[in-house]
Length: 313
Ligand SMILES: C[S@@+](CC[C@H](N)C(=O)[O-])C[C@H]1O[C@@H](n2cnc3c(N)ncnc32)[C@H](O)[C@@H]1O
Image (cartoon, rainbow, N blue to C red):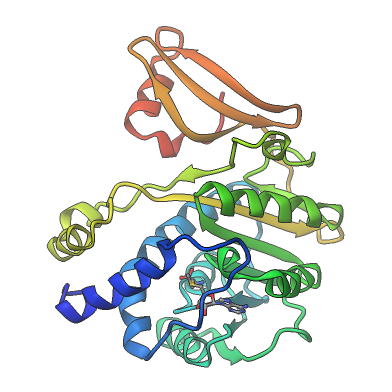
């Protein structure tokens, strides 16, 4: 991907729209003007979202989410379809349904999947009221939905067997995701990132939010085009904050139950001899101080590669 002026201008326009303050529940107008908007988005913003999906899917895998080779997978608000491509690459899929309010996005995403994975059937679907997918994917859509859109998505989630959502790591969207989790929980088991099935402790107060940081691949720092693109756009190449959720219907086949240890949230605060982390567990959120001399390897991991430390030993 060469950072041409056209590519940079297209991404700037989209980012300005995404980052602009909007009253909650106020949807954006359809912003895909042509396929080149989707191409530009896919090459840069979509790729970054894909790295968040890599991190979330790795955790789902480690939590026992099974393969989905026979599954019908629906990507809701698919945009260029990065969520479906990432999911199908990691877990498999029999058929992918691409849904977006934009017909251009639906067609682009389903074509991109057919090109990237010829063995997977992919098609655009204009409406979802009659869909009952095995796996529902939602990526960076929650913040764009008005009340009617959110209700449609929630009803679709209730008709799905597995629901996987990856969203930005900002406070309002992450808290909206926690609230959605709690509304769906009577019918679903939380597979990841939650280490428990209790109501989301983040929502007990007003200042916390469930979020994580994904590690960009080396290419983000070594590929000249990438470095030039992120620099020109003022994107912090290191920061990939995200929130996510994986739910599986209670009546679905029992998943292997790995032991659930308190899950680290956000980033650790490092001091010369200690590190402070916030963890989530059924009783609530807790701040834990770790001593460097007691566990030097953990302290070092928290310093050098905090995204690799999901839970406490
Ligand atoms: C920020 S983009 C994310 C695209 C893609 N899921 C990703 O992660 O790269 C949000 C997408 O949601 C779509 N969208 C917004 N409101 C929608 C609605 N009510 N129903 C379906 N799609 C919607 C937009 O057209 C856009 O493609």
